[in-house]
Each structure stands twice: as C-alpha cells, then as structure tokens.
Amino acid sequence: MAEVGNELQRHAAEEHQAQTDGFHLVIDALKLNGIENIYGLPGIPVTDLARLAQANGMRVISFRHEQNAGNAAAIAGFISQKPGVCLTVSAPGFLNGLTALAHATTNCFPMILISGSSEREIVDLQQGDYEEMDQLAIARPHAKAAFRVLHAEDIGVGIARAIRAAVSGRPGGVYLDLPAKLLGQSLEAAKGKKSLIKVVDPAPRQLPAPDSVDRAVALLKNAKRPLILLGKGAAYARADADIRALVEKTGIPYLPMSMAKGLLPDTHPQSASAARSYVLAEADVVMLVGARLNWLLSHGKGKTWGGPKQFIQIDISPTEMDSNVAIAAPVVGDIGSCVSAILGKVGNDFAKPPAEWLNAVYERKDKNLAKMGELLNKEVSPMNFHTGLRVLKDVIKANPDISFVNEGANTLDYARAVIDMYEPRKRLDVGTWGVMGVGMGYAVAAAVETNKPVLALCGDSAFGFSGMEVETICRYNLPVCIVIFNNNGIYKGVDVNPTGGKDPAVTTFVPGARYDKMMEAFGGVGANVTTPAELEAAVNEALRSGRPTLVNAVIDPSAGTESGRLTNLNPQSSAKK
Ligand code: ADP
Ligand code: MG
Image (cartoon, rainbow, N blue to C red; front, side, top):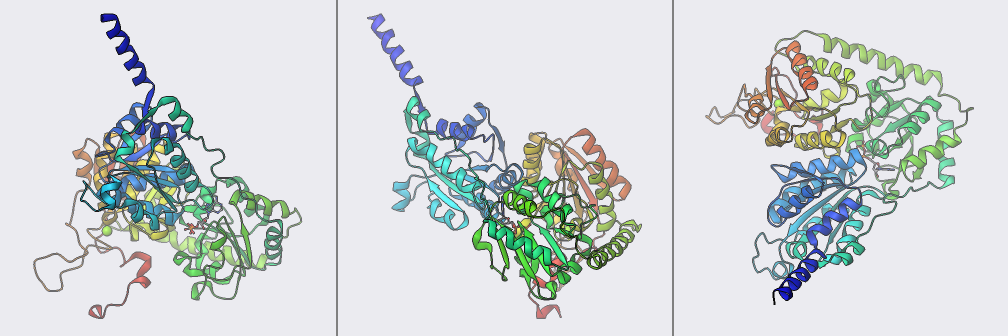
C-alpha cells in the first residue's frame, strides 16, 4: 500500500514538474528574445511576475510610480534598440504607465507596456471587478499597436508581435494586456516551450529605392547653401560611422537636434549649432536625417526658415513625407541603408559647398560662440544658469561617455545650447513633447542600460514630477548624480500672489528648499552648493565615488524667463498687460 502511495506521489511530482504557467511563459518569451531588464511596479496581479522574473535572472527595477518606470522603459528602448519593458498593475497603474507609453510612441522609442488586467468577462459586462477597466481600448490610440493574450499557449505569439511592432519600421510603444487569469493558467511545459517564438530579424533593414537616392544626390550636388539636419532617429539608428562619413565627405554644415547631439562631437568644425537661426533661414537645400518638421522645427516654414528651400528627407516612415511642407526628395528606408546608399553615390569628385556659404556659416558661429563664452565666464553671485552650466560643460567634456539627462524649462534650453556632447545617444531629454517628469526614470534606465555614471540636470520644477525615485536610485545603488538648478519656482521663483492674499503665487515653491536632504533621507549623498567651485567639487566627487548624489545648486531666483524659449507658445493673457 505504501509503495502505491509513493508511486502516486512520484507521478504527481512529475506531472507538476512538467507543467508551466502564464507567469513563466511570459518571462521565458522575453528572455528568449534577449530582453534582460524590466522596469515596473509590482502589485495585483503582477507581483509574482516581477518576483519570478528576478528569480529567473532578469534585472527587475521596481519604481515608486509607474510613470517613471514607463519613462525608464521608453528611454531604455532608445538607448538599446531593444524594446524597453514596463510592467504595471491594472487600471490605475496601467493609466500611470500609459503617459509614458504615449511618450514613447510620440518619440519613436520602442517600448512594451505590459499591464495585468481584470477578468474580461466581468470587465466587458461592467460588473465592477477589482480595478475594472477596458485597458486594451484605452491603450490603443496611444500605442503603435495593442494586443491582449487570453490563452497561455499564445503568449509566445503575443510577445513576438509586441517586439516586432515596437522595433520594426518607425519604432513606438506597444501595449500588451495580460489578464490575471492568463498568468495563472497552466500548460504542459513541453507544449509551452514549443509555443515560444524567437523573433528573427525584428527590425529588418529597409533599403531605399535607387531612384530616390539618385534624386537626393542630384539635389545635394546642385545646392549652393546645403545643410544636413540630424534628428534623434539618426541617433537611434546607430549608423554613426556612415553619418559622420557623409557629413565629412560632403563638407556640408550640419545641425543636430537636441537628442542627436554627440552623434558627431558638438565641437566638430562642421557643426552649425551656434549658427542655428542663420542656417535654417539661409540654406537652400536641407537634408533631414531622422528628424521631423514638427513644432521643434517651426513646421519647416515661416520666418525661421526664411527663403524658399528644397528638402531631402530620410525617414523610415513613408507617410512622414509632406507632413508639413513639400519634400522634394523623399528617401524612405532605414537610416543606415539610406545613408550608406547616398554615400555610395557621393563620389570623391563631390564638390564641397561654395566657400561663400561655409565662410558665412562659420563666421556667424564663431561670433556666437565668443558671445556665449563671455556669458559663461562672467562671475555672478548668486549663480545663474550660465555660471552653473560652465561647470557642467567641463564635467561632460572630461567625462564624455556618461549619460546626460536634462529636463526643465530654462535649465533645458540653456543646457542644450551650452553643454557640448561628444558621443551618440548620451543626451537624453524631454523629446518631442517637451515634457517634464522624465528625469529620474531616464536616469535610472541610463545607469542600468549603460553601466556607466549618469548626470541628471533638472530644474527644481521638473525634478518634482519624479523626485521620489531618488529612493529607487539609492535602493539599487545606481551611479546617478542629480543636479537641481533651484530657483525656487516654475520658470523663476519671484512671482507674488497678485491679490496680496496668503497663498503663494502659482509658479513659486518653498523658497530655499533643500532637495539634497531627500537624497540623504535614503542614504545617498546630498550637497547644497552656492558657488561654481562647490558645484564642481560636488559633481566630481559624485562621479568619482559612483554613489547616488543630489546636488542642490542654488540659482538666483530671478534668473529665468517665462516658458524658457517657448514664450511664443503662451496664449496672451489680458490680465498680464
Ligand atoms: P527630432 O525630435 O530629433 O527631430 P523626431 O523624433 O522628430 O526627431 O524624428 C525622428 C524620425 O526618425 C521619425 O520620423 C522616425 O520615423 C525616424 N526614424 C526612427 N528610426 C529610424 C530608422 N532606424 N531609420 C529611419 N528613420 C528612423
Ligand atoms: Mg525653477
């Protein structure tokens, strides 16, 4: 009798071993496709998913708010060319993550938002389930694609489709809905293993049509005042060597968009950054490489763009062409293939642009750089933006391989102009929306994905959106140095309540706030600095030690302009006049 009992037990154990479930299949599918990190926030119904992912060798970074986890995943996608994965709970957690998913889609970053969800049967009948919400429908307009998996044996397909959708063509955010019941579903292990898909060539090259390349090269050859404009799509594409070769072989001045800075070092002689307004207005042929003619480029028209011009646009998305102005030479394909095809047609006989144009651009540039130098070197007390930036400019010059995260209004605008980048994909900023709140999510992901230090420069307002993640930075002991340019408010800290009432003005914060204490609260290093020398010492010490650090840099509260460089976007208020 005892033997039979043992036999039964053995059978049961074997059967048990031979089973897998939704939790394991999701993890196995991600790992099979080379996804190593998850950014998320555990809770019902995904706690065990996070736990098991960690137990199975994935790196799971647990955040304090899903939006920051989502922003981390979004920028991880930009940095790594693999979809960044964000994991959230249902309804409220999902909605918190959704902002980041929309951000990823808008910025063309590959990301997958995986959210647990309530039971479909109950949600669809609106019977009031725990955290009931039709997440799939809500995610769809904000994502490049959205999928739900209902059967464990379809998890492999679901993850494969999510990966392909995120990274192929124009990258973007993908939503993957995983109901609680699915995660607990069990399946024969062998069957489960067979159902997984290792995605072959997830972002296939897309070669441009040869005649489109000829058309573009002909335009370039006839240009009198050509300009190359590099966008973050060019940085993402990792065609660094060919892009540099194209710029140098043609001798054409180039302008990097914010996150394309460093694709070629900003100190490159052909950089026209310091002559931006001049080249945009004066160029006759502009070649866009992975940059859109959206608001950041004044839609390619109006005063900014001056006289008539012809555009060449290299982009993977055919429908991007003519979105704002006519594109004379569309070149549709992946940037690597397009640039190498163009390079192949730009022979050694390619005539450099007329000296008149180059001299005009570089003269302008030198003059503006000299002006900037004067601003930077002025000794002012209390510090203003430029005094602080002079220090950080030198820090990045001495540490070109660290990631530089940047958000704020004035803190963003001035830093973009002042701080030279030397390596591609190191400048991570507010992107297409000009959004605040990406700072700490980006900083965490940059540290995790690159295994190198991160310098995050935030305005005091911008930092507030994700500031609680200093705990995450301390918990994972990440080499992140946050510098807050603290001017006591949004734009600046000197507004007063016009009624004379006791509430503060709507744009001001607690004056003299000590953000450095937040970092100290979790065991990191805090520093409060008021001079450039103190700022320099604190940041260098942080980079040397690799310890989580927050430097509260006290800036003149009256420094700063309303909306930074975007004053033109404020509707006029008659009350202001
Ligand atoms: P920026 O803000 O720097 O101007 P945008 O995000 O506006 O950059 O534009 C990036 C463009 O790059 C998008 O139109 C996108 O379709 C394109 N893109 C992204 N990745 C690739 C790629 N691998 N090949 C070609 N185009 C790409
Ligand atoms: Mg401020």
